[in-house]
Length: 113
Length: 113
Image 1 (cartoon, chains in turn orange, green):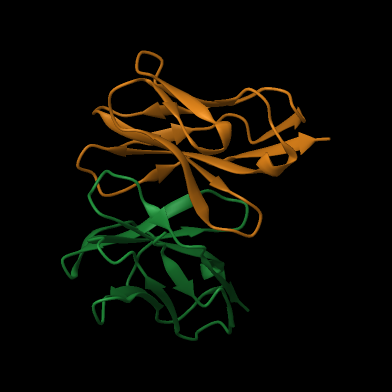
Image 2: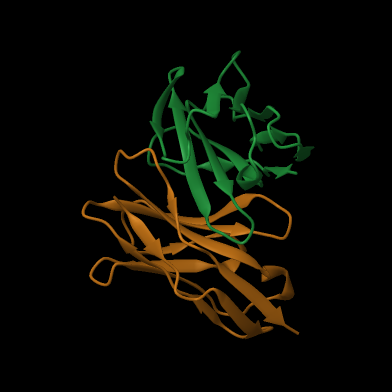
């Protein structure tokens, strides 16, 4: 079974500052990793994904994440945030051939003007 | 761009009533899912469905829940006799291949009184 830990439940950041949202996972087999964003009163939208290949993946809205197998991490980063980035961010994992996507508890990103 | 659509967006029901939540997955997708998110908590897997049968279900998905693909486009979640603790946002998702990106709908908010 897989599990995901998002240690930061809330992250306040000033506008135009950089941000890193942390995600660690646990799995005994190889995994696919995802970051989803949930804007207020909306559904889940895929930000980016790691399936294989380059460990640095770029997503929408200027976000990127780096897969680190030795540290079992997949932290999300953005060099300069905007007010519109205010949302809940979910890290998720699934194993090769597995049906189920396991989500972390989410990190609420609040941008301070 | 193709998307997963869900109806209703919000339903209020009395405890003990039956509820059906409807989803139209993306047309060429073969794998279908229901997830739920209780307010303030993480997104949890309920059930996966492939080739007209349940392929995996969580311990949450007890006998009160059922899923069906009654025609070539709709995918439904039925809760036979709702309980207060069923109040949550229910997300439908679909994908073309196991382990790949899940496309989520905007959710159906269920409130049980």
